[in-house]
Length: 125
Image 1 (cartoon, rainbow, N blue to C red):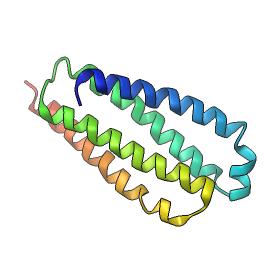
Image 2 (tube, helix red, strand yellow):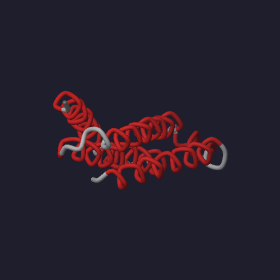
Image 3 (cartoon, rainbow, N blue to C red):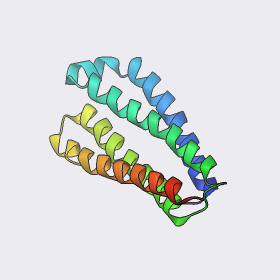
């Protein structure tokens, strides 16, 4: 991903994090409590929101660190958030455990993205 795409993705993830968090705390709270998945939903929102900031920081860092590894890091983190938080959102509403099976895959993508980000900063002179 390039700098513009990374910054846009970070802003969208942040906006959706706020909207989904508010929606979950108010309009969806009873459904989430009935499913016993309020904590699952809150975890999805929290990780999405944290990684929105990471995407914004990564996008800004691309000014100083223009390497393929930092562009890969942003893509891996974005895919990780979609898989991790997305699977938890679906699981929270459906209680279908197979959605939760995707969550660790998203976590691995995020972890590899973080490692690629560190690698980018280490390689930057």
